[in-house]
Length: 204
Image (cartoon, rainbow, N blue to C red; front, top):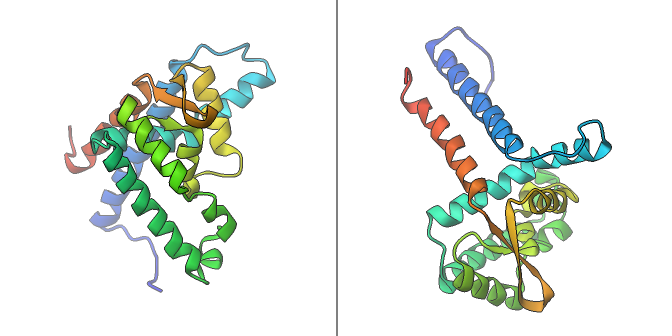
């Protein structure tokens, strides 16, 4: 393993600048999304629970994923099904790897929960064809983001986003709720990435 050490080199100073921009942008993302919500009584336990879920890594992952789907124009049934096929293939490869649980800390059972069945694959394609890119049910988000969420974290994040009005909820196949962003989540992530772009243009 390569030795890791700090020096006073220009390279380390540049890395420090990048780190500061990343942290600054993440703090601004938290402020942006928090300012968009009318909170309950800030003295209540409910406020603490909301704040923890709203500013969680799971919420940021959902915002990033919606932005990615829209930017990549995954807006047809065929495009969504192709994305699911690639997702399933990657998970199947790691499920078959005997060393993966020890290397990642993630059990095979957890990975299997991220697989789309053929029915779920077809349903996701139909939802995309009907509503457009970035729209899916709760289980769709949980499956795609299985590596990025803790136990119960994704449900808590979705719950607070629905309650706070970031998602419009539609009736979907098999009695599922379809979650459609009102546009703010992907806008927050776009702003986050725009701030990071300063890494390549120091001084702006």
